[in-house]
Length: 138
Image (cartoon, rainbow, N blue to C red; front, top):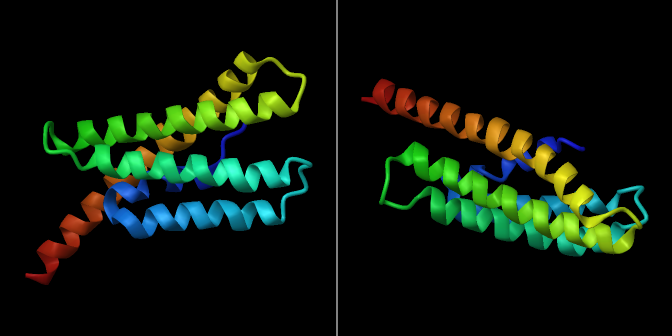
């Protein structure tokens, strides 16, 4: 299990839309360039694709008008967690001898912590700060 703090930034796309989506995608490519892992090319390619899809879905689902904002934001974080878990877990299982379900379990637990707990909390803090800044500017 690995809790990737960088994945906690994926939900920022809910608040910052396209710039955050591009940022976490490019950030994944850049961070994997210096990776000591033998899976560097797969991580740069599939990890970045996973981050792009996860961030894009979080952005779109998190900003739906059907429910209250916090519900959609949590659903957006959950969609991002599912994407990261299955994309990253699957390509890592294909490159190793470890069972697929073990990769999904390990990546999934780490992603729940980083995206659904830390990332969701970060979004809530950002909303409160934005509201406070708007009040103080009036």
